[in-house]
Length: 292
Image (cartoon, rainbow, N blue to C red; front, side, top):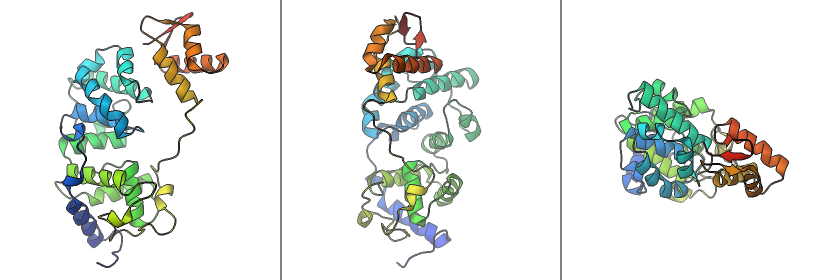
């Protein structure tokens, strides 16, 4: 097949046919792919934000087992939820998820809403997460654009794209009635073949309609949603914050014990503790610090 003009109906049809032909059989067996429960989908998507599948897998089942619905999480102390979140990082996501669960319990009768507007109104739920719930729980024909999808689309068109262009392009590609399948497959493609480093273009089902094909500067690196390298973790504020949260308990731990556990100079430790308290992730009791 010759090179197709990006954005034409023929190009969109070629992309859809190639990706669908690649098939459901290529999808990894992941627990959130075997459920249509909107709460389970919401939990998995929040966990997967900036966190690898490998880290989420051993945590997801335990979290859902303890908090099988929004009311269960809303009714639990935040400290308990944070304790089960240990190892996933970015604890603000857990706090936001609990706040969303509370809103769902109080304003939506305990049922995760099923409209984009209502989902976007939940704490910590952005465009990606809201659309993921619609596509994966309700099989709606909406496009889910994460870092992997952004990379695939930018390379297909061989140009960097804004967030709006990415969403519009993704929306135009979803085959009618295949929102679940399409989104799962394009995300899988980005995660396993059209990777940020060392993409295996020769194995890609979209090699033919792709305008980049691994030649020249990578347009994905300049697109909205492109992954950016994180700073060094060793010795970082993220590491010290994590150590502090692991050191505290609901009963409270002497302040000097928490500061010592953080492994940084006392002034920096106190600044980080103050930030955690301000974020609602710790409770300052003066001489001691506790989980919320």
